[in-house]
Image (cartoon, rainbow, N blue to C red; front, side, top):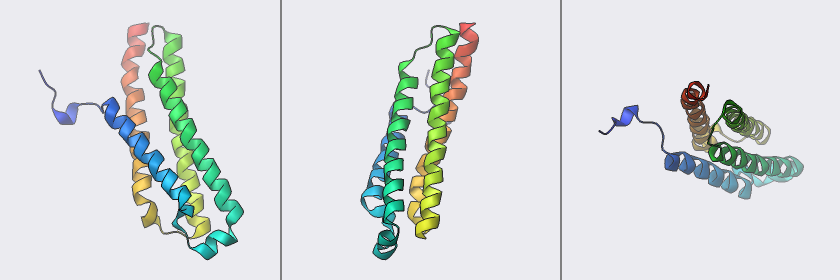
Length: 144
């Protein structure tokens, strides 16, 4: 019997689509110097380069932690805990990405509207990771 759409969890394909959309948006953001004006970018070149590198590294870390968590199929409580830690780190990386966005918007005086979709995607990723972590709580009881 099929499940009503509102009651279904997010599929792995949807989850990965969110991640790759987020990563692609960050790549575009970095390639276009955060969509800031040329004068402001040149005045803050070191800051722009540092934020660009940090965001690219955080995107790689996010992928790394998601892949680690997804590759662990818990057979015992210790493996469940390891998976949960990787999920928690992925959530933390998402919050770090948001912090970098805030710093860029403030320093480069870029309108919030330019990053609205990116922020929505980051929040969707955070919510998806939290939902995944909550759904794993059922596994913990089964492993005891």
